[in-house]
Length: 274
Image 1: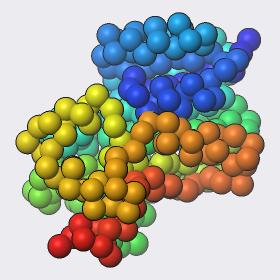
Image 2: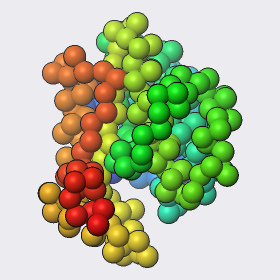
Image 3: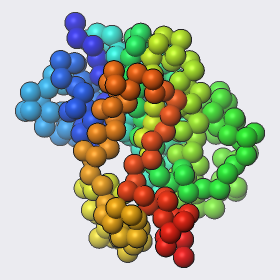
């Protein structure tokens, strides 16, 4: 039996990564929208990959466990790519916290229970988590280590303490990075590794919609004033993921990699915050 690669989130970034590392593996695509999962599965199948797709709701622990159990029928879980999530312009504060924050925490925990020795994982976070002010060591530890089922009860994550959808998204992505650090310790007991990548503006169908929507000027200004002077591509994110999930990245775990063309640097020390 082949090792199983879990790809959660049927989008361009997840597919780009899977195409780099998915050869000779059984790829199980999970997405809440089965039509999206099928589209990505068809593209990969037609490119020669061994791929199936299943429904998974990242906001539901039972759904996540069922997805993992179904995937295990094909072999041992050797890799995880978590590229699922909702954006601040797509969803409510509650949904962002339930999917991007709670769902990611549960997925990392559940996969960590079954990942094979020397397995690897990467979760896609966001540059947004790097833009928020420091929360302090106490809140950081809460985000990193609180039991998943108690996470959304933390004071910092109560709706009355959250300014808007973007703030909720920033909190979720900050939590993702902290959960990866904590989970890396647990995964390490199996010699397995887990890291996160925080992309900036990446050209995808969703991003193109954003460029042409009401926040388009905001996004265009962001990448125009970044050192790279342009948005990124899914393959540029996959370049980093390929390193992290290969033997060349064997000494890297519990880390987060900012892949944003320097937009965060420009936010703090350039023209983006003026």
